[in-house]
Image 1 (tube, one colour):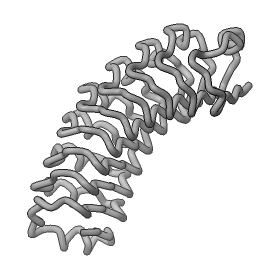
Image 2 (cartoon, rainbow, N blue to C red):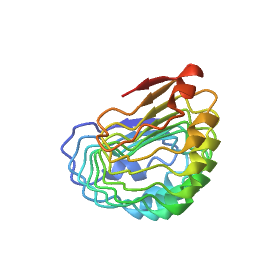
Image 3 (cartoon, one colour):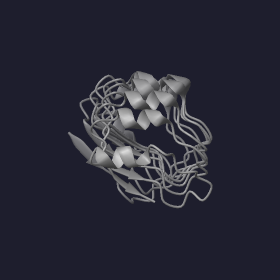
Length: 214
């Protein structure tokens, strides 16, 4: 079952949602929601949830208790400054987008989300990534454009499936040599990092068939 409330001008989630426990896809994008009730945890059949383009300043811990939320969680273009630690319990989720928020940090336990294949965090205020990032070994695409990152944790070298790494418009000054340990990396975008000192080993990455954009 699917419910689509895209651009309905909603200030709160309709009651009809709570009477549909078999709901698998819920689209609440482009509304005027300022909060999500804890009852969201009752929707245990959900595999896809779109809360993007609202006015959310937080999401409830119960969101992390949805056992079948495996496909898609979209939180982009809200007013989030942090993601709750409870979100990291979504260890089967494949796609997470939290772009265009005000995120200043990520949960230390982010590495528990071991099924993530694509993570979009561009245009936030992140200055660092947690060391647990290296546990996201299913990651294929990582988008970090428009943050305040000065470097990356060496653990990023453990992302053996990573194909695309977008680091445009950050404050990078250095890169970990562990990027050479990414055998499938096909594109590394470093444009508009004015303070970045290019490492001497960067040509080796290009020799591994990785396109490096400067």
